[in-house]
Image (cartoon, rainbow, N blue to C red; front, top):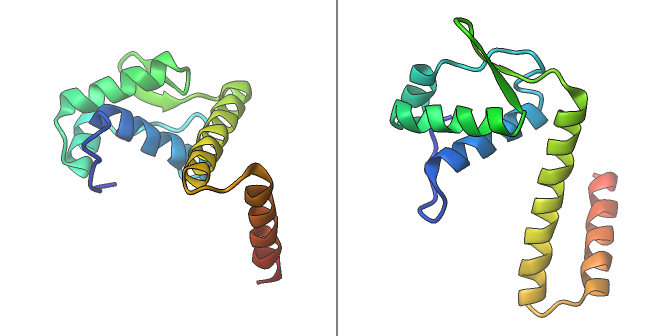
Length: 124
């Protein structure tokens, strides 16, 4: 998980996003224990306090739950996980559409481009 961090977003938020994406990809499963704060800090090359803040954010959003004396675990609530999945999808689409509009594309051009891309992907 040791990757570079962007300077314009707090590291704890970037770590939370990386964990969310690992859950979406199926690398972390519902009910699975997250690595300890110290282990994640070493893997990510960040201060354990930053990781603790990341885990707090995940708990506040319902994605993770802390079990006293056992650690932090991915939620087993399918509604929360589905909500996270939809939220992240919407955020990525919104970001993509903003970039395309900034480049001068109109909605219909974006839709057509996506459709063409998906059709080409299906043929591969």
